Image (cartoon, rainbow over all chains, first blue to last red; front, side, top):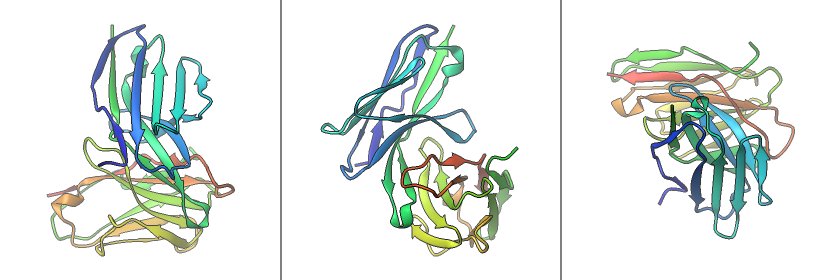
Length: 113
Length: 115
């Protein structure tokens, strides 16, 4: 079983739609959680951190359920520019304080006119 | 541009050849990471440096792979006797090294194709 599991999609949605992505993780020792965005043939970029209390950044809302080991991302009023792959990421602190990021396979979103 | 830089951006090589990639982290970032991403997958952790010390290596890093960060600034990743399965994007990331949980900033990656 993969440590971080996501539905690979693609999710094809019309502009203005609300879309939700989910992810589960297996390592209960994971210490922090993120969503990264990756455009085609580019590097991943941090979209937002995810907290148990839920957090919002403009049209994006992320939520963590530690008991269920479940992470979600909600995108409201989707734009063409939101088309990308969204990577669910869990973090573990390493020896010396570094961070090991474990990525899901990513969920591909295509926003259409 | 003061972000993470990687060189070369693309590399095509024949099976059995050695290749070396370079990563220049963001200035004054103490932590440097290497990841590998194959098609349709998320990046996978390979190794991590705190200054010049290599503190963690993944089991993915076979004995054909070696990484260095000799002066605690730039890093190199060498793959010896390349195999077709080594074809992937190799990503470097850096973080300040001031705290336990930090944002990692990724470079543009080096795309390797082994023929």
